[in-house]
Image 1: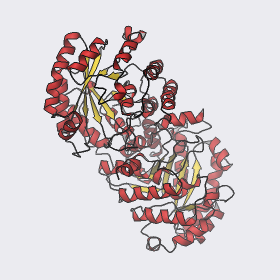
Image 2: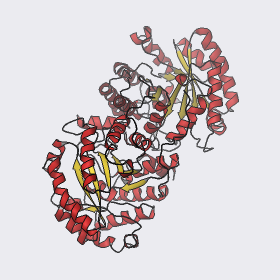
Image 3: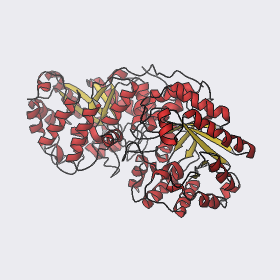
Length: 312
Length: 312
């Protein structure tokens, strides 16, 4: 069976949303200084990243690593890329109090998150999915009133550590709710990294019944090594926004020692090979990943990064 | 853009050819005892593997790790799975002398290898591609006369450490030569792991002009983390034989410290998720990988294996 070698379904350009400074670092046990976080962000900007999740306005009691959100926001204000709007720095804001803090800090984009699994929602944020969506309504309303963009995350889209399988229709229902409320983009997260390509396809296809594919992002964890294959399958369905984390920052709290977010370096290596533009310089990106990994006292959790660093 | 979620092009069953005991271990610097190799092979059989490359009849001067090929063959003779033919143990035989050794040891399947890159052929086996193919002719003739199956490998199919890009047409030419000489299967190896999915598609499509897809195997190294995405792309083109190495055994001599062969555990995890049968028990496979990794004093180089082991 011979088929055409090129794959016309693939997008020509992909938007990378960098998770490193927030989703990546928040699970790190050792404290990372504000100055190191800002230096990482500067290096990611220098590598060409245009969407960098910068911090979270959550309680330091729950996420001590994000306790410096005020300092991060204050520093970002002086970045020329923040002033001229050439780089976006979304901020995670789980509730109205968090949103008000982010807004006071100058946030132009925020993010809210819901789970596709009832059990995960209860254990992670202590309320039902429906209640969590009710909680976002005032955040999204306030953001709209202030001209702030809102990104929506859905977690556990391909499996839940408590429930196992999650029906694609459930993911679609939650994604639709976030989109209908006004999220400009919905990021679909395989939080525990258990998905495989056809399950990813089925999930994307179910969501795309209600939310245009152009408004969807895929967010894969590489816990079982499946992230790039899943991303390739999503690209084939037309998804053109990918969440990833430099140096694979971010472990998996449900499988200690296992890999977390897919590494931005691995994603960009694949997209370069596919001829898909990202605007990102892989060499500078690898250097940014090497910088933060050195600060954390380990090698990057990225195969492409380690191969490129080994050749130096 | 909504598309069907299932992917009818995918095969329903995949043949895994296990590289661990040969391609995997041959690059290991520390000696591995014959007993450990045999115990690994026993565990791989117990996990359901049916095609296990067992050893190589090459000079111990070049590949000291394979110096015990006579002992391995002698021991395999007593395996019931070798006697009843339920498991195949191909043996790498680069020349007629090697073939005669393997035949004397009872080999029922051997393998020969050529490169798709002239520079690599010269540096790796000290002759041109055409000369290497001439060298295989008597091996393949002798094998045919003895009823021994011959597998052909083509290396550097998506890139060469010396030449860079390799034209798909060059790969097709070498694969065709091996197939026309009588190789029952041709394994296409991304020796340095630089390929990405569309390049893999283009290469497979070029080869499939001359060799039926059902006679092709894909052999990816995970050096840049691309192996599973490439395998998924090859499955979409109908390739149904995959070479892989338990625990990701086998480094990359061209990028020290980088990842080598794609891990069988990661491949089987993906195939299980895709509903593609392999006959392999993932839990037992992970245990086999943990066994050999422990012998080598490290963790498996498999994300799926480490995630599953972390959950224990």
